[in-house]
Image 1: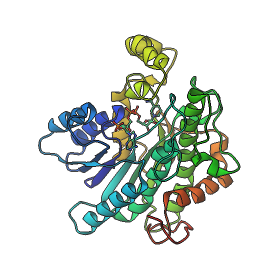
Image 2 (image 1 turned 30 degrees about the vertical axis):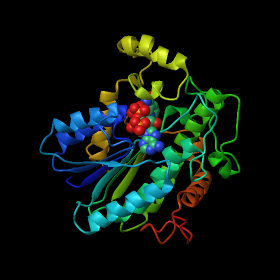
Image 3 (image 1 turned 45 degrees about the vertical axis):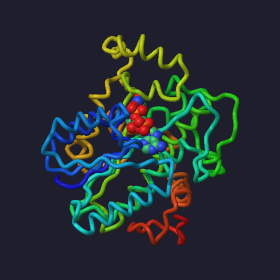
Length: 337
Ligand SMILES: NC(=O)c1ccc[n+]([C@@H]2O[C@H](COP(=O)([O-])OP(=O)(O)OC[C@H]3O[C@@H](n4cnc5c(N)ncnc54)[C@H](OP(=O)(O)O)[C@@H]3O)[C@@H](O)[C@H]2O)c1
């Protein structure tokens, strides 16, 4: 499937492997790799560049995108849409919403847009990106790949202190209320963002399926497993977590895997992500995949009334209106961006 594939957080642990797999399995694709720091002075961007350079004939562009800034996200989407319209880029074939933020060592942070950062980076900005760019997919449709986690289930993740769940007042999800338990609340914010992504994906698929223009675009929310070598465990985490990774998970993961089947290296998850994005595995399927196996997801995530509520609120938080998306999604007017 030659077309343009966008991947956010492209210098991340899973993403670099996914990029290599995409370049090897679909060399005709055009890849737009977004990172926060495009300079090779960033060691992760340098690693991404080295991975790309192994495929000298590839069509790859590395662009800057900070998902903590909604104005940037809308501008990035407008630029891509214009380039597709002017045939400078092939129509989109996939968007891989890989980037994520969490913070378990600081009080909850607000973005410049006034939204809790974890929820904005992980969910709100990706929703804006997808909805702004649906009209840039080709007639053959394509894939939307979103990332959830086992932490969307209450009681499933060992880092959980407070269970995930959508509050009655959904705006509570984008407020950064101070809390002394940085670790517990930081992880809960992450888990809530992964629950919101999953529930929004279910709603998105309903709108895509009923729209003749977009019913060949399918969205999946993937739990890629617990990634033993991810740098996420060393980013904004307590020292105990990075030590556990260094001294337990990384050296012992082949044995630990016998008792923790979802523990795996980033290279395996990267291969899965590429296959899903290229529609080679679970072609056209929609919804939740846990380590590439279809659902079920948590009881709350399957509540269609709550899915619709998060759909409506997400559009409001993301600045999506009926004027700036091609999807008939029941959106209001007046975009602030
Ligand atoms: N690791 C796991 O065990 C696990 C488990 C379940 C689900 N997942 C999901 O899998 C996906 C990939 O995880 P990973 O382990 O590969 O993560 P990772 O190695 O920590 O990479 C995260 C990526 O997100 C980027 N990012 C952070 N803040 C950003 C922002 N404001 N704007 C744009 N990009 C930003 C980072 O870029 P910088 O270099 O600029 O920080 C980095 O490229 C995530 O969605 C995660 O939630 C992972």
